[in-house]
Image 1 (cartoon, rainbow, N blue to C red):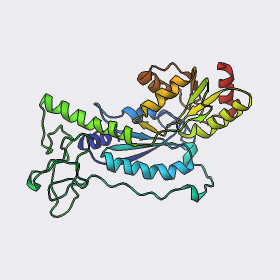
Image 2 (spheres, rainbow, N blue to C red):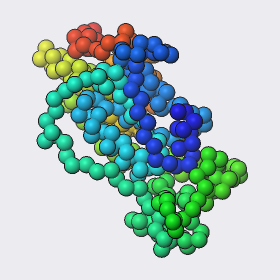
Image 3 (cartoon, rainbow, N blue to C red):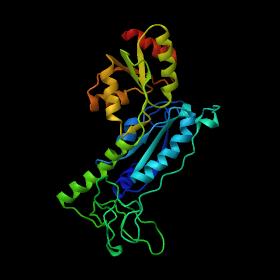
Image 4 (tube, rainbow, N blue to C red):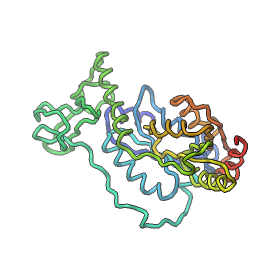
Length: 303
């Protein structure tokens, strides 16, 4: 799997990988839940390897977000890791079908035989000089469709130039690495941002991910009934993170609690590394989900 992630990232091949997390390590407790693969999803493979990570929060998300994951893979031409967990994969839930909007998988930026990209954003090229990995402002390069008459290129795991030929020159490697990472910057601007839940004037904030959302929201509701000023933020896209939204949320509160079902506090580690956040960590790793009461107690303890 890690070799596939690295190859798909380097060759800019769309791929969606579903990781249904269980309690580990190793075989661990295969029928119990945990949120312990976040660091793996963000970092697996050798070298700096851009990828996208999506974590559904409920059963409805498992339907709608997997469609979005395929659209993301196609548009940004990179691996997308879909992080669910045992508590979601084994859950049965009634969902209002009217809540789902019509969705379709977004097509990739295709190379046209006349020498331009399908939407006009690519550099004009003669058909015999197809640059599969052309440098673009967005980092996204037009890709040809397979079949007779298609523009051929080498989808190599080696570092390469714009046409896919192996290239080990330092300046070219630097430019190509920056190109691949620009796709994450483009995605961060284009993808939907998480919505704040709770009080606008909250003093206590909760940042969670994955299947803890419903429990966190119940805890927020119960805390507000008791007079606490609390709000929650629950990003579903964990790479690239919505930096501005998260920074604004952190600045708007005095204390941030990060509840997650793993031993090491993997989201808290990420938030600390990216934003300097010293969060209150609430970790549970016995193989069962949080209860709202457990998170409510954490709110009361920091108040």
